[in-house]
Length: 304
Image (cartoon, rainbow, N blue to C red; front, side, top):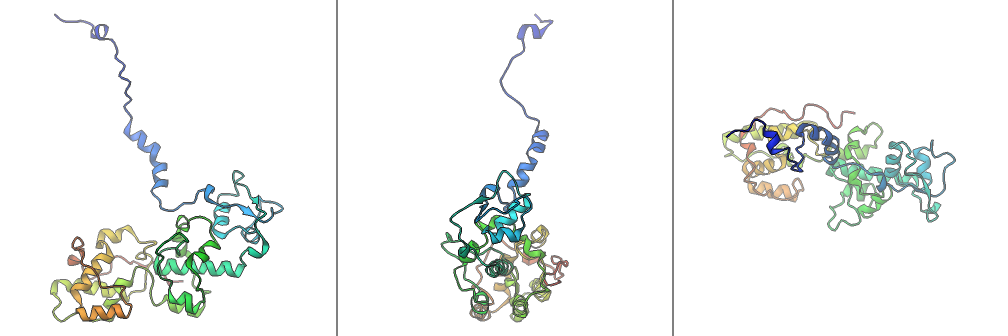
């Protein structure tokens, strides 16, 4: 027996199931994913728009005026970047007193404190809730006289977690107007280069395997080349990972293989290294490293 009209017999079932168009959904999600994939970005709800008094015309108010009125620097920059949004207006806070507003000099020093930490440690200063803040560099404490806890300097210029404020701004700072003491200190080293340091200061052990010589020569070349934003952790190119693997972990292994233990211990005592490297068995890229520099193609940090 056969049916000449199957639809008439079966009908049109409704399963209550929706099958998406994968490509259309991906296109719809793209902007959400782009935003969520970034570690930085400040929501307007995170910004404190409190001021001591309202300016005559909030729609044209400048950064300097906002600071004079008690708004914090990073908050003011975000608010101005958003176009002085009416959805988040300036509000008067009677608790803000003129004597409590940081001076422009204090604000400038706090910005410098953050900048120094970004350039030398690739991180903002620790906040007040950080239970294990990193050591404050002696240069900041002794030379610059900034010996207060790190969170003090952050709190003068930011009311939210500073990590949300894209640190890549440090790349575009010019050194032309910096004091000599500062430029000299930066010349001693920036973030991303500490593990390269031993290779320009120490000779390899006499029995260095021949197959490791190209890797040693590569590390020495990078150590002697002016520091580049292509290697600095804040702006490191993704190609560095694909070409050389995790730099610090591979360099740690290379240090263990290249130098006598007595020399490595001396490096730690002299603070060339933070500690004796720990062998990272999963990071073996250095065994096939070639000697040419293919990761710092310009973008030199001290070019300006």
